[in-house]
Image 1 (cartoon, rainbow, N blue to C red):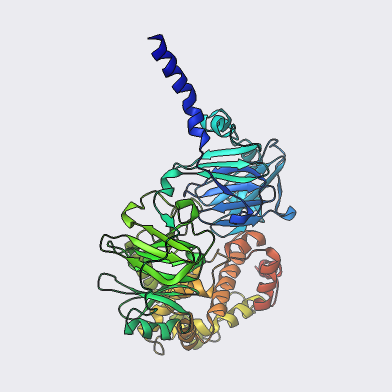
Image 2: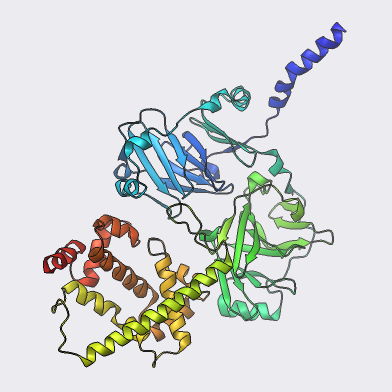
Length: 546
């Protein structure tokens, strides 16, 4: 009996050593895209991504790539009440708060920028610097079983350790980057040195795909995919994936900004469930239709077992066999997987991109029905507003002697009126525009106003929201409004900014942020260019007249 107890005791003692003798860690450093290897703290964001603070950056990992934000001295906010090690706090609105010894940096991951005006952010959130200083900043991970195991395996100092909601273990080292471990992910994809055993596909899967390529991606298409079970045709190009519906309407162009690991898409294949798998230059992407013209995008890379030794997947080398397994060829081997086995949770991107309000509630396409009702409501309101403005304009023409409260318009009002005169005139002249044109204008305004605070809102994003090719959008807008999309967006920003200057007590800095400008200086210069005066002069002159 004593011998049995001795053997059991020895086994229990040796078990942790056996578990740690063959660790399944991936080392993530600058060779994997990490900007620095000096890790200071880690924190998982509510959406599943990992926030990483290095010596001079805040970096966000979605599991396949790193997005880096440089921390500059001019973006530092003094936080006199906090003294301690660096600590990350991630909230549900996409804000990442990095506290250091007497300092604070805030990164807005929704708008992809470091917040320059932390004072305005705190005021908007009804927070004080003292409250932020008192947020919890514990290091309970130092007492965990994970720390006891890992500390015996590494020579470098451990600065942070997080077991994320996907079951993966992240270890931040003081000088050596990150350690990542999640054995469940490694079992989903299998890379071998066997040559790709199937014939390469043709770039165009049908005559229609060839015609669509000539129309939407001439000389840029690598591969294509369509079929009876698919609602769309897919064109894999050097600039992303173009998705076309059965009426030959371009409904989406997915690229790195929408979640693809890289823009260069070399092979496409559909699985038995209708999900589309894309091989990019350095990873695999699953595209799943989630609603009408909406998709989720999930990437899979080396941390999931998609290990090609740093070599690219080959063009049109993708095959699905009768059992459902998919094989993808790369220069030096083949990656195989079964879509039904790819079940581990994964952070997903959304198209159209989810937007959130200040409280973190989704205002994007989480419900396609709600989105369409919102668009219809915006169209109806726009038509009513247009008719009201038209009647007011006609009455003003018939009564030229009736002077308004202020007979002399300020230079700013005149300039804003000139900037918006053309599209307002077109909008209100119902006899010159068809109902389709009026609806088109209202949808444009609703799209721009929905993203008025997003400084990264571009013509490309507008074309995606309107489900139109950028060239087609430009031509249609020039025909209906007489101005280009970029000028139209700028005019809307200036119109809203002028109203905020007149009707609110918001500071010029706050108005700049609300209308999508990265700095007050840039906003003032743009406002003066359109209105002839600076925002402060515009407000002061109006107040003096009142």
